Amino acid sequence: MNVEKIVRSGLCSGCGLCAGILDDGKIKMEMSPDGFLRPVETADITRVEQDAIEATCPGITLAHETASDVPYNPDWGPIITSRAGFSNDPEIRRLASSGGALSGILHYLLESGSVDFVVHVGMSKSTPFRNELFESRTREEIIERAGSRYSPAAPLMKIRQALQSPGRFAVVGKPCDIAGLRNYLRQNPTLNDRIPALVSFFCAGVPSEAGTLDLLRELGVTSGDLASFKYRGDGWPGFATATSHDGTVRRMDYDTSWGTILNRHLQFRCKICPDGTGEFADIVCADGWHMDKEGNPDFSEREGRSVILTRTKNGENIVQAAMSGDYIRTEPLDLNLLPAMQPFQKRRKQLALSRLAALVVLLRPTPRFRGLRLWRAALKGGVTANLRSFLGTFVRITGIRR
Image 1 (tube, helix red, strand yellow):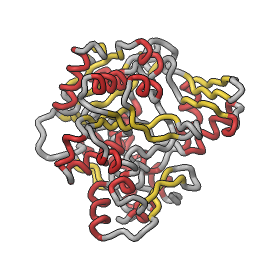
Image 2 (spheres, rainbow, N blue to C red; image 1 turned 180 degrees about the vertical axis):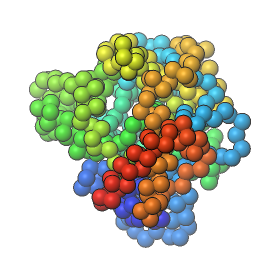
Image 3 (cartoon, rainbow, N blue to C red; image 1 turned 30 degrees about the horizontal axis):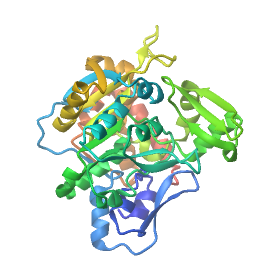
Image 4 (cartoon, rainbow, N blue to C red; image 1 turned 60 degrees about the horizontal axis):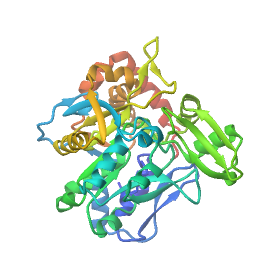
């Protein structure tokens, strides 16, 4: 499973880890014709380097350690404590995507001296509809880069450079990004102290750049006119907001932008992913949706609320310290409420095994998922739903050309 085969098989998630762990320039992340970030080899890869890629790539390997004393929920992964909450900083709560709990925790980590900087993505200054990798060191920089970015991002493509910088840092990334980094740290345990916090969020998949361009067309904005583009934030759930150089502002509600445009452009690897909930993070945050009269998530505007799950003892210690320091405010969250808040995530975990089975039947390269209790999740999902999932995936993957 070299880089070319991983990409060709549709298993690449675009995290950038393979580029990040090799010598500079051997692999570069480039935008593919279908609008996803993909690794491109620019020099010969040694056998040792290839082994390192294969051992750490989250596109082909997700594995929990066998010895763990953290309770494991088949639908939601390892959980020490589940909470709902928000940032105590009103500006962070308003500008972030879902109550600002994640940004509030980052604020605590920086101000407490627990980390010297945070590695995460934000809006590109030169091309606002794309993402750029940043090292944030202040509250103001955290706020500037807060909010969801529903387009390709490779937060691990410069991980070696970050490790070569002095100080400790936190990393914020999609579940696959954090799983890849966890794989890498297991291979290089001496680096654990350099990265004391791995933070993630619930992810429904990565849309291609084509999805964003479709969204801009619906807003009546050309990419060249953009001075700023945000997918969410400035309220909850907030609006997709395009600001032109002449100051014109055009907006689209979250249910339309994500629900009818962006989610039609997801990469294949996301469609077979069993981990949209950041099982390998220390801390994971998500939208704590309220329910409408029919019991479905309500996307009407209101004060933001985050789901906050701690998955490791380290993560629990961080959240407790952020609470004690008044950076975030929380209350207990009954896990039985989570399926109503996040029905898609529960369903994707329960159907993951059937989608993998379709790959196996078609003799396609198949990721290795260990310790995620997929059999137990599938049993909870039911035979009928998994059969439909298998057949749908079977039909879909026969046409994959990524």
